[in-house]
Amino acid sequence: MRAARAFAAEGDETLNRLRLALEHRFDGSVTTIRDRATHAVPLCEPPNRVAEEDTLHVPVDDDAAADHAAYSRAVELRDILERRRMVRAYAPDPVDRATVERIVATVRRAPSAGFSQGQRLLVVTHEETRRNIGQLLGEREWVTQAPVLIVVGVREDDYHERYRKPDKLIDGQELEWPVPYWHFDAGAAAMLILLAAIDEGYAAGLFGVFAEAMQPFKRLLHIPDDVAVTCCITIGKPADDSQWDAVTSRLTQARRSVDDLVHWERWG
Ligand SMILES: Cc1cc2nc3c(=O)[nH]c(=O)nc-3n(C[C@H](O)[C@H](O)[C@H](O)COP(=O)(O)O)c2cc1C
Image (tube, rainbow, N blue to C red; front, side):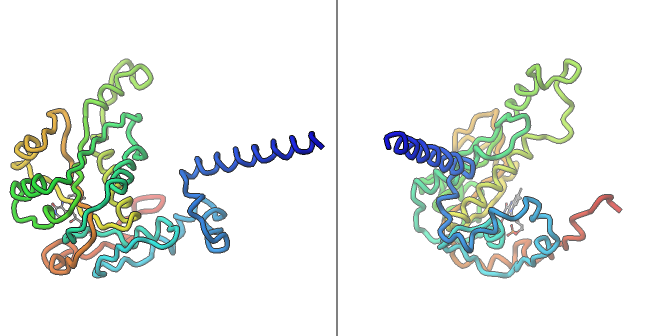
């Protein structure tokens, strides 16, 4: 009897270990599955489903108003992508600290060349600083409106330091960089922030800091010389930004077709 109980307890522990391992593996997302019947597919489908043609040809409605209400169910990446657009008007409601922390923590999941991890973020929430940034950059009301602003920076030296380590040297030399991987990695981190913001039920926008404003911008925020600013991301509850469509690329440029952008097997 005692042996049977011990066996049962051991079985429970094994099950618990399995459950924890699973939760760890999926980064906690397992616990968000509420309805096995409707959420069975993502766990069972083969991993190559993203490459299916019909997935690639899902039309993107460029003129849709921002729809960033929080999801009421566990969602797939495809749901988030349908909402992915730059939003250029925000309600003044603040974003709570824990949410911002979750959004910026995605930087740890960003890929980086050689795992150099050169990405650096600066979160700005103080109203006065946001106002100063808006004034510095000029005529960007939405920059000041958004309650959260994230500067996406990257430290190039992290890459040189990493690629001068023995396991990365090529014939004793740092590699010849085919493209600046540090800029690529900053872009990857920015993308995660944009998607994480939508996942949390917020809207996001992105802007660049013009070259002539860069030094005053870095001085204002005390950004060190060895960190390059690649872009800034605004996050907040969306307001109506439809008047922006006429002046931004969204209506002045057509979205290219998948066939224009994607080649298969050979370029032509
Ligand atoms: C590197 C980069 C810089 C950008 N700079 C600005 C900017 O300064 N101001 C702005 O309104 N949008 C900026 N955008 C947003 C683009 O205009 C936008 O992504 C593009 O028009 C496509 O629209 P969508 O993202 O809403 O689909 C930038 C995007 C990138 C990737």
